[in-house]
Image (cartoon, rainbow, N blue to C red):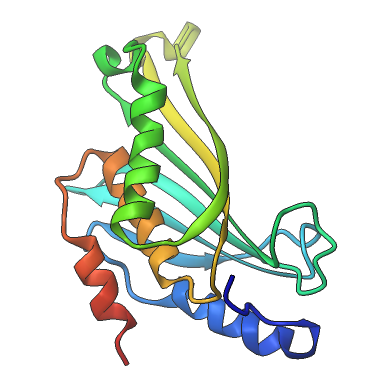
Length: 191
């Protein structure tokens, strides 16, 4: 496994890792902004949120959190852990498909592979939730949302490919047509 820093250079190692979060979006439909990171999960943490907007309508959103513990005192296998969440509304016929979970999970695994995000110890969940309105909300109809939560350990401290994979996952969840995000990520990584 490549060197991903030590306690002595934690600040520099973490800063380099977080630079990937603050780069430009890979697609014009995705808007990324910095948000407060959870304070108790690791000695160093950073977070961003994103929304996917098409024709003025938000169709997906998510969060990406980077945790860093140079001392290795946390319960994940390595100094870094990437945590993501992605939510999107679904059409009702897709929401009832029994293969929704495995297909949604494949959006993540395909994104990690296509973006070259070397990782290990991937885990997560896919949840679908249906919301129905009653009373004064009865006329709003039912909506179904899919939510994916996942985490993995990157094998290096350059998180550019991991950020690209998260944005690719957002685009897939939103139903956007595929883009050559691996090429975009490579271009973004160039000085």
